[in-house]
Image (cartoon, one colour):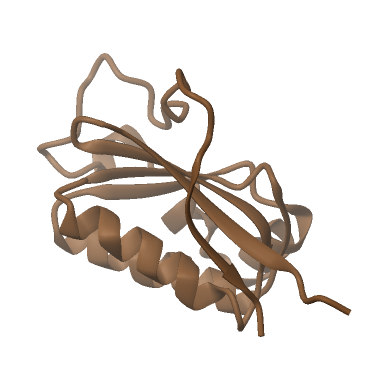
Length: 141
């Protein structure tokens, strides 16, 4: 029986990236998530929106990868936000109380370089104008 696969799609717009993850995020695939988010920082991206709509499962390994990436992004003067988490991740965020770290912050808590009084506290991820093309893919083994 083949194991589930995780695919990472990335669309950049200046210093902002939309990362769309598709599949399952668990102990085997969390390193792929970590690598994709770290690559954004390496490429100078400082605003990272992660669309989890196509994710069917995410355990605490995925949460750890997102928290690590959010911390690194904040240290670099940026922000990472999760959008449309699957129910499994939503439940973990509720239980741990760390959803506020990943799902958006009140405007007053944004880094000064990103804050804008006219902008909503949690803007939607950038609109996709091109079809998704996988940039990273890995079999969970």
